[in-house]
Image (cartoon, rainbow, N blue to C red; front, side, top):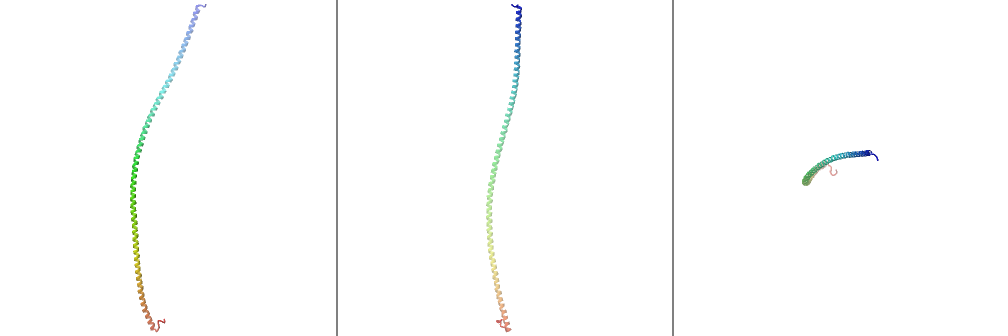
Length: 198
């Protein structure tokens, strides 16, 4: 049998070794736990950063959405104002166009009436002018006929007077010729000549 001291000494060594193993195991666990804690801290920090970024992005998106909604609302208001203005302009233009059409129709009716009146006046003037022309032509024809008759009468009277004067001159010359012939015959007889022999 081994001595007790040796046994006691051997048991102490085993206890010390077991204690060291336990301490090492605890240190490993502690270190592992600390590593896990650090990993969790890193993960938590990453999650916090992601959360912060997500909140920031969400806030940015919310801001952009609000701006977009505001811009859309302004665009709607502008479009509404433009539509209202265009509707007002269209109604105004339609009213002005209606008034202009009415004015043009009135002017057209007045112009047609004036044209009809002018045509009637021109027709009357033309008919009167034709009537005056025909009357003047008739008067001229009557004057020409009257002048022709007057000239014919004048010529006839002149010819009659001329013929009368010629007849009177003939009778005068015949009378004078007879007297001259008688004188010549007597002169021939006085000279002893027979007028019939000559």
